[in-house]
Image (cartoon, rainbow, N blue to C red; front, side, top):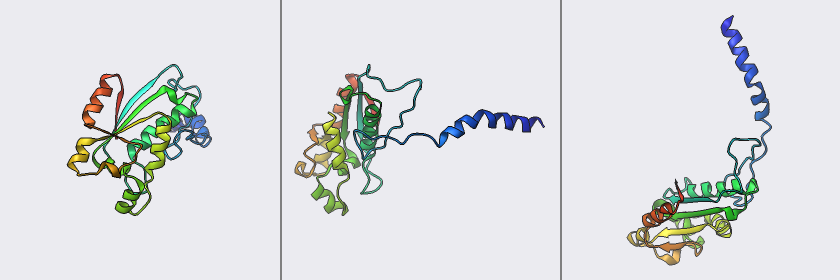
Length: 182
């Protein structure tokens, strides 16, 4: 009898949460539509605020799980831009940087070279464009490009070649940017 009463007590306590579960608003993607959206949740302990300048650098090393999907780092950086935008925080409060190296370098190929390699249009290009418009700095590791014998003319003109990804990561972290690894 006690166990049944405990189950009933837990069920009654969770009922308001379960009733609300189907009523969440749809995620919003106002800045980068291709990235994951953000659900604005009222009365949370820590919500995006206009009082903060958000500084982050994404260490983009992972390739996409399919040729028609965007890179994980672009999705996550884009989703954070969407979080700020959906919350009314201006994108000028986002000081974001993405540094590509390793398998992520395929995602910054121009469309012709991406199509030649994967047989589909590059889904990352529209994301790169939206991010550039939002003020995101985009770099690729020159060292990785040199070792891979990758012609700089094959990458999107939205991405700047840096001498070394790790040095860029150190520079921004030394300037107070949070490191995000994807």
